[in-house]
Length: 330
Image 1 (cartoon, rainbow, N blue to C red):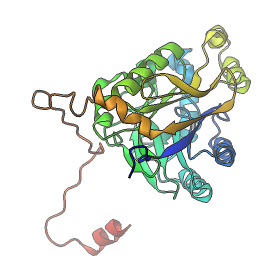
Image 2: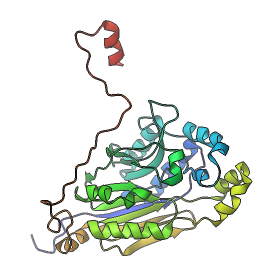
Image 3: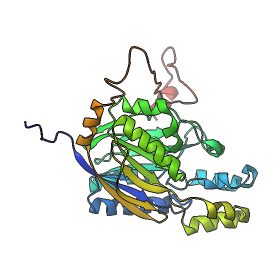
Image 4: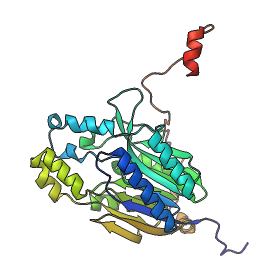
């Protein structure tokens, strides 16, 4: 094999800089399907959607007092998804039908509580299999009014035919231990979902790409006129804040932190870029922070990736009754 022979894949990535159909999960899922179809037709192998794209980012928590938006929280819970629900199944089928990978942000409901939500994301394979399911570990600032703490179960890098794919949600990219956990699994493509704060997001993403020697995908949500008008009608006092807010940007970075490919900002659209993962190799010679440039004899990181549940069940002693057996079978 000659030295110039490519050993790692090249892939085409699509970042959807789009708005949801605000607080309407069915319509937003339909829009998601259409965008996956469009991106696949343009040769994308990986299609990325914004933070809590289905069915909304709860931006109202930054604009109005909590006591004034209980109705929006109730509406959000109604329009959120179960990871094992029919909406996720439809999206899995779409990926399978079009042979693409998709990374989708959504508001996730809990089977244990009617009022518990997580800021979640799911990576679906081109065969429709869920490759990773992540819940944001710590909601940021006012997000604590909406979402519960997640866990480290989703700090997982999926080893796929198009590369080793990892992700973090918005402010999680500020957590160096979370980022190192992904680096240490050989991450080659890092997906970061965000909503606004263009400068901060660009800086954090570039830092991770440089340290991990990985490609980066920044996928931002978009606030369209329908969302803006809905929120202003709900509380006219939030108009000034919303109108002054900076729209997010969707773009791509290479393993040096330099920007590549398309960029979409201030409008709906799909950005595209091509990643040649062979470009991840050479920079490792300078700073391989999980290999030769790390002192593993000095530093040690332990990560608890257990899924956190409200109850841990232990097996009953003795022979279960017939009713117990029936319940367990269900």
